[in-house]
Image 1: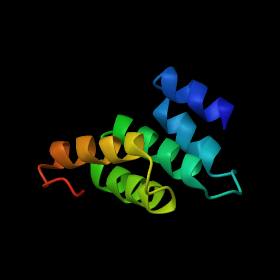
Image 2: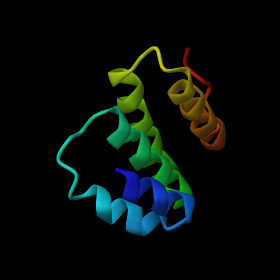
Image 3: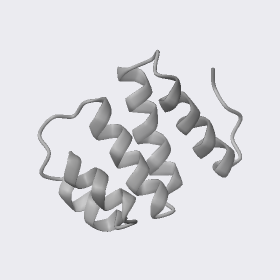
Image 4: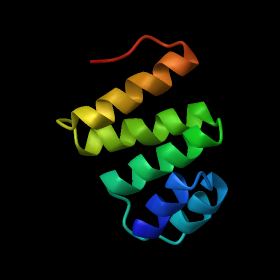
Amino acid sequence: MAAVQSLIRERKYGQALEELKIVETRDRSYYSLRASALYGLGRLAEALESIEEAVRLDPLNQRLKDARSQIQRRLRRPPES
């Protein structure tokens, strides 16, 4: 996952998504990184789906909730609590 994080920091979102395709574990980190890459590509509806799955897997993580709110604002949807 470190390689994917580096690609996202470098704004290589398409490459990050490609790297995620080979990741076997579909955990909170996977969905969070996928949401970041999709967000960077402007694929907001897909990013929202991924971040919602990350929040479902880790419902106490405020950073994930904040990311979800940011995506919802960009989509002009009311945030969930």
